[in-house]
Image 1 (cartoon, helix red, strand yellow):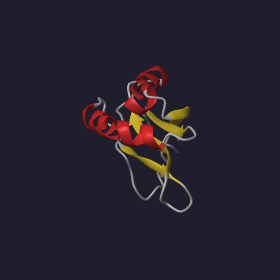
Image 2 (cartoon, rainbow, N blue to C red; image 1 turned 45 degrees about the vertical axis):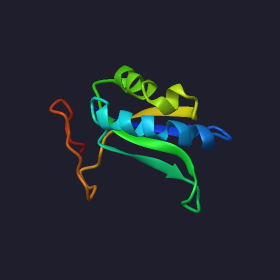
Image 3 (cartoon, rainbow, N blue to C red; image 1 turned 90 degrees about the vertical axis):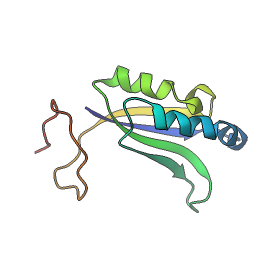
Image 4 (cartoon, one colour; image 1 turned 135 degrees about the vertical axis):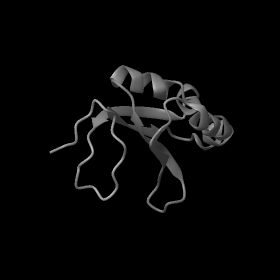
Length: 107
């Protein structure tokens, strides 16, 4: 099942983000399962990080929560808001992500 994880940074965490950045990046390279899509959320100018977004394929919410709780940014207090939501991609989307065998395509 696909899950989105939307994380927003706290105030004044630029130094924490920079200090934990290499560990966060290493974690994303080795975390299992591997995220399908991920990247920073940016301010309107596209210059400052304000959070992170992930799309992962795990069986349930508990697995998604365990996945994000293992991230150094989560453990280090960079994110003050973390939201986890089930996601079903539209069959009309121009990019199709792989589906798990148990997940039917949306109709």
